[in-house]
Image (tube, rainbow, N blue to C red; front, top):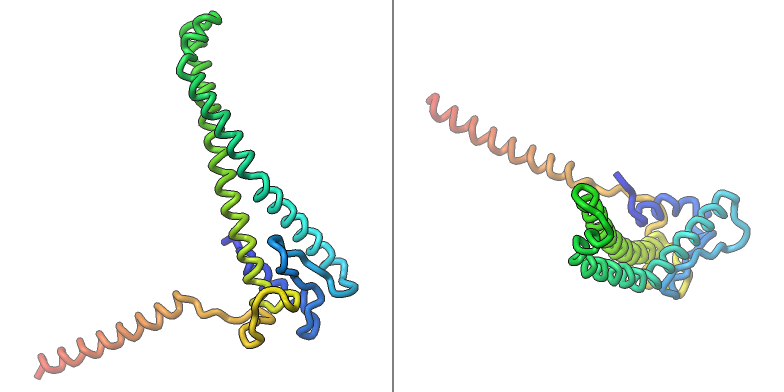
Length: 196
């Protein structure tokens, strides 16, 4: 299973806190939260901060330029579709026949499909990047790693470390056991009455 950013921050919160005092905080004031070390930090945390900043820069670039790039891809795809209508005639004029003409049309069609696929991937990546920013904000607040004055948190709700989360499966199993015991008890009572 792939971890989401909230899970990663919760796991990192023990490293990012020293005696329940954050040594690295997230500034949630801007659209793109930044990590701010609170003094000298260990080398391993410097690598975490560097990797995080690189992810944020990539996210920023994707969100700011993604729509323009996607529109250019779609323009190319639309132009290719218009060109595709006359592709057989153009191929014949250029001397392509039979299998070569069929292969050229097939390759051109494939390239149009690839363009559409790339535009869809870019749209999906943008949605995922926005979701990642939401997760970062939520994780920072819930782990108590947000810079004071950024994000709204209540001390009672802030999580400083990993907490046990009851698994649904275990709850379902327990409920299933209770139903089975109830059913077994009813069946036993019916058997006793039938035997009398």
